[in-house]
Length: 312
Image 1: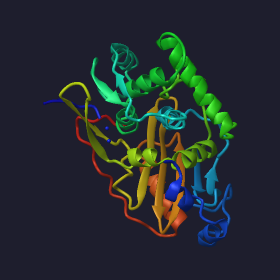
Image 2: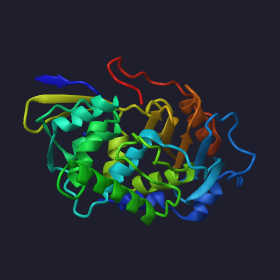
Image 3: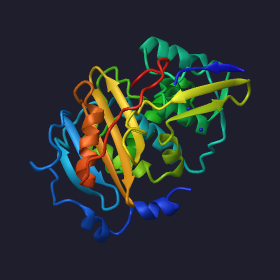
């Protein structure tokens, strides 16, 4: 069996009920109001940050929450949302990998799932390839498959349009996309910590999304050839800090290190965002923010990715 390295496996139901637990119960468990106040986790180096209680939808703390910033590969949260929110989406639908997807990541030096031309993977498998190794080739494949029009350029442009319309529908007033993967050639893509937390709260309602982002690694076999893909999750907070359930990393020279993260403890979900953090600080900053949200210090010992895996 051939192996390809790179870096992947009902909406609402019980989770929706848990995520939208009564505000009275959630508020009783929260610290004193601290949103946009001086009090909160200390020493957060990120230029923008946000902590959100997922049940009550209440801000716990923030730093420059409404300043627009580049978002790098956290863009892919919306890529996944557009796919998963498609009415009647068939997650088992096979998608053929085109050479154009490989050429794109080579040309842009983008993060890749190392998808092989001619292989067929399901939409579900491509979501793993998108979110774990942060595959821009997988993002291209999904945009090409879920966009409308004749030709790849028209379909990917259509898909980006769907991303922007979904942002508007979700009330994300300070979010705009000009790419399907976070590679913004003209700097025309931005969001805020507040918007990104709200988007993630929406995404976490989807069971498939939670399953994908919660996997530290996965092996997925192409549906038409005997090739096994092995993908590792670039979010090193997952498996390193107790009760973390996702969400997504992102790094570019313009955006700096970014991280969207979520944890669930004692029936309470907390969502956090750091944008344009300092080098090697996004995970410690995330841990400090979660310590503050839950009122308890939890040790952080970062897991290491295999040498063959690229960080994002």
